[in-house]
Length: 252
Ligand code: UGA
Ligand code: MN
Picture 1 (tube, rainbow, N blue to C red):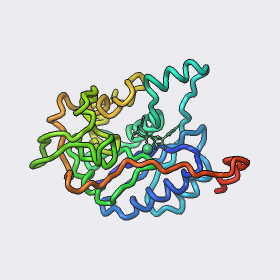
Picture 2 (cartoon, helix red, strand yellow):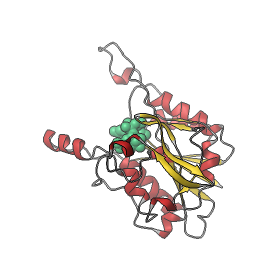
Picture 3 (cartoon, rainbow, N blue to C red):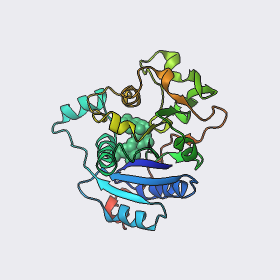
Picture 4 (tube, protein in one colour):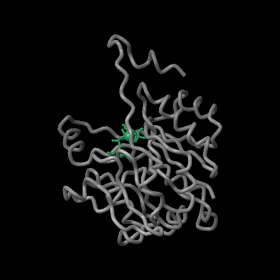
């Protein structure tokens, strides 16, 4: 088994420490992992290349810059309606997988989207590796309550714990990006599957998963709500003397 861990990443003060933390979690994995790091930039940067060369995990380094909206109005409209982050980056990682694997050699592979700022217990990669088609598990701090996601009994979903369900928002599958995985073979069974910028805000996970399953009961229920293995967190922006420019800190 091999877990392909797809990580979009962009330039900011905490980028290096976030990626370093993720490198350490991946290094502890007992399941084989391949880390696909996709920078939100025109070209791969030395900061990320150096970090990956020092990280003991096998990796692939790609880059694609998120197209910026031209006018302020377009920017604001897009932010309110969609506002997706890391979407183009995840898509070129999917493209890379389709280019480098095929329906013949996909069987041992599982795809997981691991944002650079979350925290991962290395045992989550063992859980991910068991994915037959598409699997889900709870994610800590993902949406207003301590954790969000499925409650499992014998690997089937018995209910969902989600703030969204309670307040009746329209997320059909109330799960964070860090709360699901898809088998690599699915990419070849569904060659058209990508993330779509036109999807509404907050619907990326639901829309993506519904390309593989027709109802959420088909999802394999993994992990336990008693022991969360992945947390959606954000690294605080460090407070810095305003005279310093980003470049002063982003030494490789
Ligand atoms: C939440 C979800 O957990 C994400 O999976 C989802 O993509 C995102 O919302 C969304 O709204 O689209 P959140 O913590 O709000 O995540 O977002 P970030 O962690 O800031 O960004 C998600 C990923 O995209 C990160 O790996 C980040 O490094 C990357 N990113 C962010 C870029 O590549 N470019 C950017 O300009 C911003
Ligand atoms: Mn995040």
